[in-house]
Image (cartoon, rainbow, N blue to C red):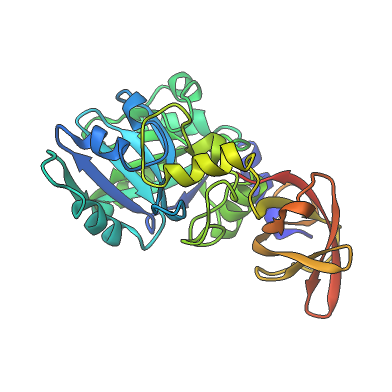
Length: 329
């Protein structure tokens, strides 16, 4: 039996929590914090109001990814959520770009607990846990937030399939937060289930499905992370050139694959084959949270990136059947 699907049934009619303490959290404050970020990242920070958020990328001048960020506008400051292991180096990198701007950048990762809660009754149960309105939580846009006084804030996750929220809570009060979640009936879920839900939603993770060699268009981030109406940002020239002169065609595309039912779980790095030749590699793999089969994200050559296309994946000495069922992003 698929162990992930069994776990998922426990939160389908309730909610489960997953620890995201390993993620980084940068704080941007000062009069020029918004225009400072606006000139650097690919999405429209200047269009945010307090309590709203965006997903964005920070690129090299060659259009390749340095990091992705979820930026939460907290009124007097902004929080930038980044992948594990990046916060210290990014804080230094951003700090080196300050000239005369009134901006202060700090790595606040150790100050915050970050817990994701997901499931069919996530809004109701999170509301009960943190004394917030369930109806207000249910109507938040992706990355929109509700303040929890001095205790932090809760934000709508940007997962397109599973209702979910991210609670930012003072790290020193971690035990109290977990007690609140348990009292509300929210159960802890495994990292494997949390990752399977991410893969099922087609969301790439930096450091796993995206690296410093990735152009965001390859990972399907155009609609999520790139504004076509804002002013200049680092790497914009390359992105615009690909979109306008190249018709948006990139050498490879990140896709989601669903495997034929079977007992074998493929592995990241396994080769994807079509028409008798290698066309790509898997990057993330999991058992589906919904069905008795494996799912994966992987890059394939643009000529093979067709929804519905049948492919095989070479795992050890086996050839596993699969289909491309959507583009990631």
